[in-house]
Image 1 (cartoon, one colour):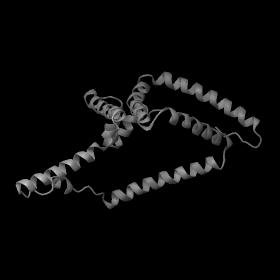
Image 2 (tube, one colour; image 1 turned 30 degrees about the vertical axis):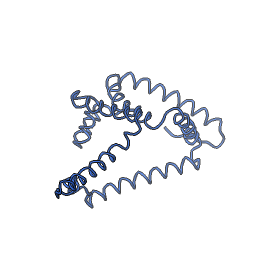
Image 3 (cartoon, one colour; image 1 turned 120 degrees about the vertical axis):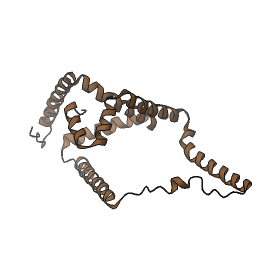
Length: 202
């Protein structure tokens, strides 16, 4: 479920880049979001049609480097490396930034490993069955769509679902509540029929 407008405003007050990202995903400024969304879709659709585009950036820089080297040799000039100004730009991360990112990555890895251990060792039978069904469904999704198609669907969802949810939040929450109630009743019936499985406390 997407973040509500109130929670979005709270996030915006804490972090400026989060605020900008939320404004873009919620289409607050059409002149800003439109070009970003259009550029992403154009790039992704281009990659689906012309796989050679994936190697164009490196091919372009190598060709330009060779061209400038030959030109300097012919004209007997010494202009240096054509990308020297970009190579001199400092792009390294500070020690504090590396430590912060490392701690976040460590937290996510540990949480993921604990959850996978819980699911694969069947700590909760119902959750493990849900996970097995999800993995089974993902095999069919992977057979139907390639990576770029899934990426296109993800981008479209990112730029459409938040707006749809914001506009129809009441109706969506109502239907989601009904679905959760129905799923909860089905899970409860399954748990009652399986020996040794205890119902989770609400």
